[in-house]
Length: 132
Length: 144
Image 1: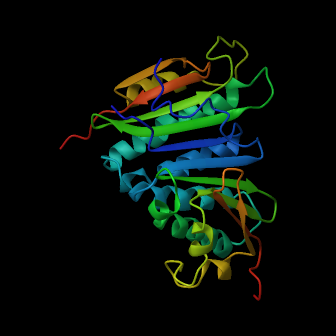
Image 2: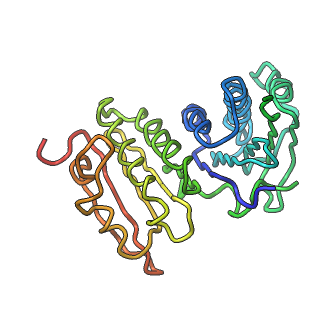
């Protein structure tokens, strides 16, 4: 288990921040056990989760913060995307295609959503180990 | 639900919605993430590509010395994005390390002191006696 994340990113929850997160995560290959394919999967899945925060987390509330934490646990890359919005709720008027969650689930070994002890909404993405 | 690490309280770690913050453990990840973080934010400004690149190198230079500068083995970098500049705040740092970082041996990977690339630099003291390095990167450094 990781006792602390390798990094924490905290950004305003706006569309430009998704690109910042993706660009920053492009550098994790220097230290994490990832190959090019896994790196792409991480960028896509985390990008989707961040886009969800920007589009939906604060839809009915003042703009908030997008928080991304990353590390490794037992050889798995784990990235947690957090916000202080109400969490995932049905939004019939949403402009999204509804593909984000299935895509994230497909690219990860495990995807969990819920609320942390401090009340923040979390999406926790655990990626498969690189096949050697 | 367990949070990865959980060492920091809540997502509201950014100083405000005007700032972005990166905290990264010292080591191979720090240099890469710090420079990418600053470069990505620099793309939101009207700064030239060269100046954004120099801002990224500044961040990398600080990250390279992360272990000797930081009290807890983590680099804490906060960036305020304005239309025509980036303001980087690095710290808390060990007392006196801000001055050492700006010393003659603190050179960027491509050569040249940090002061040479920054538009302005100052070191502030936090309430608990740590250093806080503030670096502004605007369109031109002094003398250019």
